Image 1 (cartoon, one colour):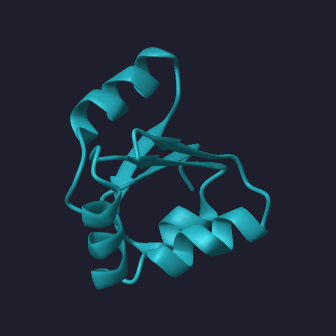
Image 2 (cartoon, rainbow, N blue to C red; image 1 turned 60 degrees about the vertical axis):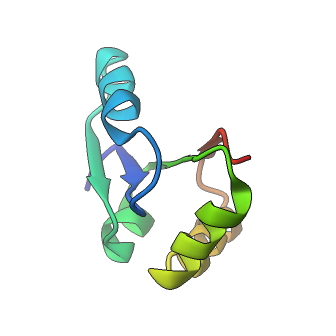
Length: 83
């Protein structure tokens, strides 16, 4: 499993987030697969600057529950610019 999963929900600057993490030495995967996200050691939720739009997409892809599960598991979760 990846060290860091970046949640791909069609919003946010995924390439910059990925490159920044890799530049720090992390093994990164950008994905919308719930199993990979939950299995990762750490999770990053890149933002869009407009919270409502981000939440709509997370809900549409059913990733909002995945984010809640990550939080309940007490895994490191970094939200970037979520509005």
